[in-house]
Amino acid sequence: MPDESENKSERQKSAPKPPDVKAPAAASDRMSPREHALATGNGPKKQRNQWTGPGFSRVMGSVEHETAKLLHGWDDHEHELGEPIQLTRAEYLAALEATHPKDPVDKDGKPILDEKTKLPKLAGNPVPHPAALSPYKGKRGSLRLGQKPEQEKA
Image (cartoon, rainbow, N blue to C red; front, side, top):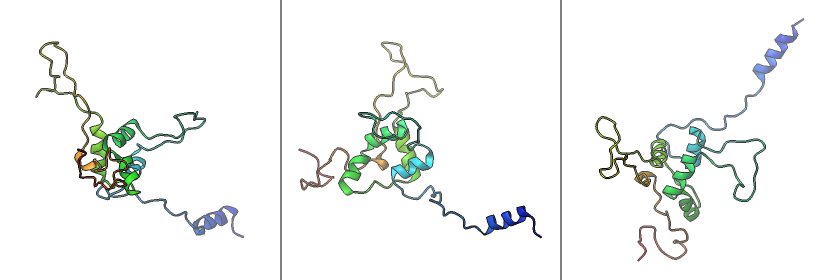
């Protein structure tokens, strides 16, 4: 008579495997920023007993992801076209890096000092990465007004 453990292992082998949710994408595949965020660990994380009140109604992604979303106009893009902007992994990571501009340094890696104050010069405001920048940034509602995203406001 077969052993109980043998029957169990045979049942486990014959049991159907759950389908893969999504296979990891290649770095050159174009995906939405949210898909990239989830794949790179920058997406929303489930937290237990999180307080949700006014202004805190959803769990946000990483600070870099949320800043890049604002800096590059990804929400405006999705609002206008009804679908998210499609980026490669390299474009997404460059957009995240653009949220933290580097302070200027000399060839030896030392901070460049301001001549008057003798304090290190700071990088200034973040500049969007061109490949991740949406043409619809700041133009929410422009399609309803008959404008194209390339047109500048006079």
